[in-house]
Length: 302
Ligand SMILES: Nc1nc2c(ncn2[C@@H]2O[C@H](COP(=O)(O)OP(=O)(O)OP(=O)(O)O)[C@@H](O)[C@H]2O)c(=O)[nH]1
Ligand SMILES: [Mg+2]
Image (cartoon, rainbow, N blue to C red):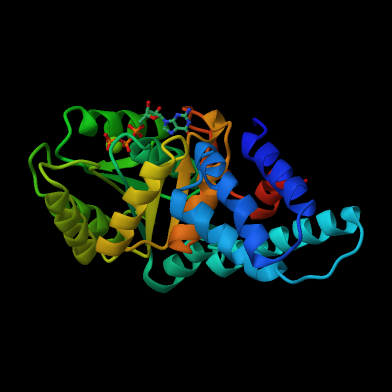
């Protein structure tokens, strides 16, 4: 796991701030020179601005004597701000939710949403594998019927893992594929139904309409946004679109293994106020880790 370069930027920000008077004007002046530095580290612009605003409110007017104390106080408030953010976003215990749904109705359904190339299909495979290892009967639904090769890619993983696979071929109605897969849950053939979806259609409106239809038809227990940690600002914009148009309960951040900056996790939680459930840490089937906010904050602030 790389260390994040965002950490160095935050460190020098706190140091610089510690040399100024903690009044709103001075705080704003220092902050404004750091906004773009944060953006360079993968923090979305509006998130950087908003975090500095929040911090300013927390520290402005604080009376502190010595420089060292000041630095400590700023750091403490900064940490609190980020801790509050992650705790407000909550936590999803996916294993407990799965067990509960299976107890109640026999199966658990997840729809995966996200822009093309961000890692949905790979993530479906990784999670399917984890469920298999826990002893569940798993179905993968190939509800990306649009992109060439998408069905074969999902099928490859399903057979490798030994998961059940549902496809109706290309150009089939993706919602019909999702429905077929859910029926396998209803019939008791499957306990965990993972629905892979397309990341691109002819237009964005098509895509969002389609996602809404898949959700309406499959009534998933969980909707998970899959976002690429390397895409930065753009991923945040995409997350917003999916969130406003379709809605989701939490996200999975992929390509975390290649993220040397570190700002993406912060941005996505700040924008969606929903927890990150897992991070993808490689292209292999086992490269999925539960996301630990405490660990992440340590990586940024300690
Ligand atoms: N390094 C790394 N690569 C990843 C990770 N997750 C996915 N990838 C790679 O990212 C590329 C795209 O992944 P896909 O799973 O096909 O993405 P998708 O969202 O399904 O894309 P579309 O089907 O086009 O919408 C593949 O080459 C994956 O191997 C990750 O956590 N780390
Ligand atoms: Mg895919």
